[in-house]
Image (cartoon, rainbow over all chains, first blue to last red; front, side):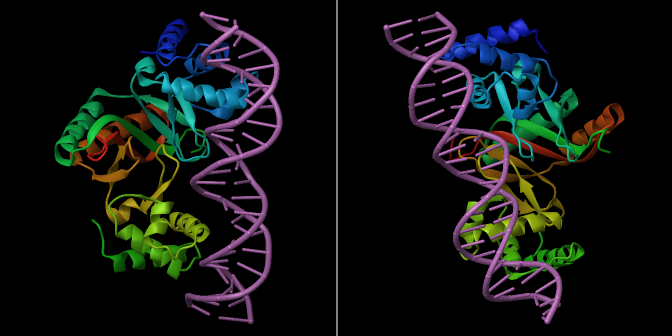
Length: 147
Length: 147
DNA sequence: CTTTCTGCAAACGATTTGCAGCAGC
DNA sequence: GCTGCTGCAAATCGTTTGCAGAAAG
């Protein structure tokens, strides 16, 4: 499900256009960085990957890319938010969150798990009148480095 | 699985003692508020429930209660963190998160879902060398009021 | 050209912390 | 009495925002 970077740029340009925004060089740079990793990155990690980016513009552009539906902001417990391409660009997945260092890794969803979640979702919508649009599963623990 | 408030206080006193802390009136007040709800509360909600509490002490005591293993901090997407009693006091559960108003409600875990999660956990530990200690499942959508 | 972007520096706001006085044991 | 707790006010720090100049189309 992970796409070539040209595909990502094309999708981004289309979706940005949908909210009257342009695909500029700063936004291209952000998408290139996020396309090149398999885990959500913090803002400092993004800036480290491309030191030419200005912090405020990076923050601002991540908001725009999120509004355009190309980037998703992932919040865990630690000080920084993390950013990754949306699920429709990378495939639906979950996260492994290390309590030691805070690092977050992607974990591909498995059909049996998704089936179980969907069945729970159906029950909730029926019994609680809560409309479920999405879900988020994090496994919390210790990564190989921290253990 | 939800306990009487006296039980909560007794457990809290024991665990606080374990980290050289006392069960004071401010901490009692926080535990009373958190025992009396079925969803995690933001700090403003906590202060609204008991306006005699000082903001900084409430924050500080929630940290202490978290370190003692009695309270858990829940982070979603919106500006405020939320606090609730730990799972061993309230029972393992998941969260319904409303994208409209940010409100978070508890959702009791179902055996079939837990079984599916545990099977995924076993696979991850084997294949990725990541030791899983806990998990977190949020269903994102619109609550009855916002829909 | 006009509209949207960018970068800088300043502002914001949830949370944390220093400190002087108060409470638990 | 110690030792730890509280409340106030000030500090912290990730993130947001105002503004003047630079790019996109």
